[in-house]
Image (cartoon, rainbow, N blue to C red; front, side):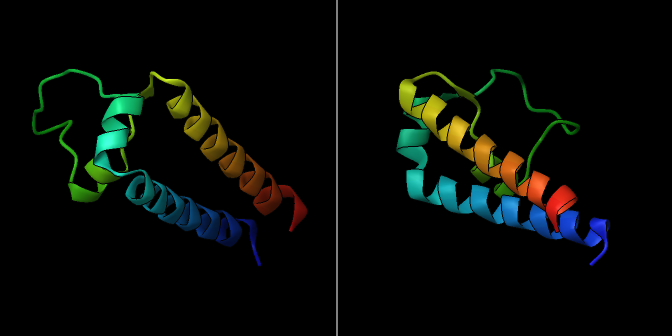
Length: 86
């Protein structure tokens, strides 16, 4: 498999992972653990349903920082494997 195919598969896996994580955490814990940036929505910076659902924001509690660290560790590890090891 070419490197572009491996990276594309990893990217799809990351999107699925973010969706599942957001679904498991739920909106109430996501609001407690993460802080969204306050800015007015315009046509250029508006997100769709899936974009809003998987958008976590900035971690503001220990739980949010732990979720962020785990997600980043998974993304970086799979990116390294997809690019260099396969």
